[in-house]
Image 1 (tube, rainbow, N blue to C red):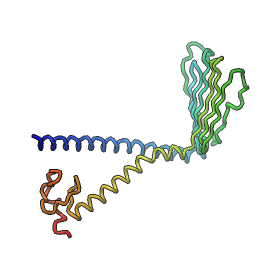
Image 2: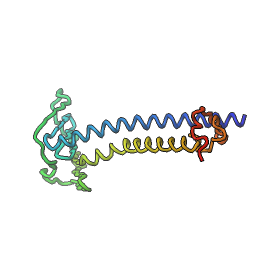
Image 3: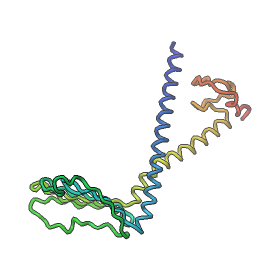
Image 4: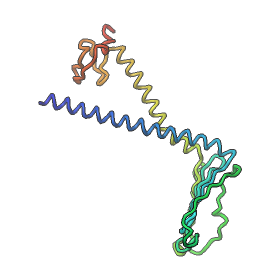
Length: 211
């Protein structure tokens, strides 16, 4: 029973590892799609700027591509309706000639009670004005496309590196007659690994006779 339990536990662990491997592959594929889309938008941003504006009762949200960057803006006006009753939310799309990111918040007049955040790091900018007394909030976040491309390219790169390492390891195991599960020398027992108990085909002994 002990040996059978160990084998079942090992098989369960292998199935869990397979599920995690499939999930990682799926996430890597989705990340690769985002990587390609971000790269295309990055190039496009030097010729055209795409802007999406969402206007609703509590304020305005917008996103814009601007010469190598993405800018997201938030204008929140609690208590001040920006659309007339019955108008509902409105989403607008605009396409214009490429331009650099513009911080429109700098044009706003300072008011009593304003709390200002002005943060910059290697092209990443966060600017915010918040007034708790009036219930107003204005914010802008700018991130370079290279940050997005680098972030979305990490998983595909890790997946590719893992596949290459797996193939090189499998080639090494076949060459030296090692168990593909635990790496134990199986040249003397090519059909089953005496260390981990994994059943192997006759082809696994391709390394027999290697010295």
